[in-house]
Image 1 (cartoon, rainbow, N blue to C red):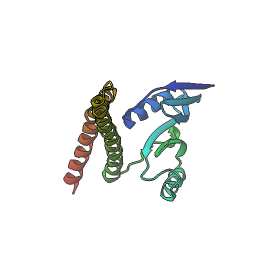
Image 2: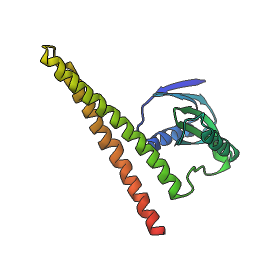
Image 3: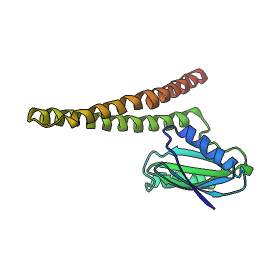
Image 4: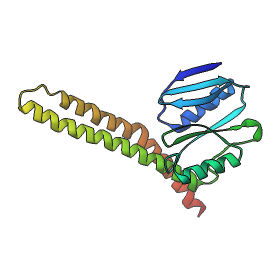
Length: 183
């Protein structure tokens, strides 16, 4: 039986935890689109899920090679969303980790950080554009709705910085520190 859940996650580790909890309760992910998870009944605890942000779009040859490599190790590509891929592996096959070392985990976190900065940059651009248009419109007697929209865009950028970039930066710094200790 199919079940649809609508949730939003901005932390891929929390999303992974959610998917693994659902699998432990007997629901296996079959499809994902923005904020929409589709599950089907499965034996409880059958799968372990892992998410990854690919370096290139999914149809790029390097991404296809990587997906093929993951499938050769026993993982299954369940679904993808832009550059995010959702893998699963049967729990009976043992532990499922994508990153065997700090360097690969560090590269993954840095790809995610780049994505966050891109989204923040878009919000800042939209905010500046709306501020400019708001000032232009108010000088000819129009209500300053664009000025209010710029405040919303700037607020979103600040929230993204506080709740996404700073915690991820701390994880990156911790991994960098561990890397230096091991060298």
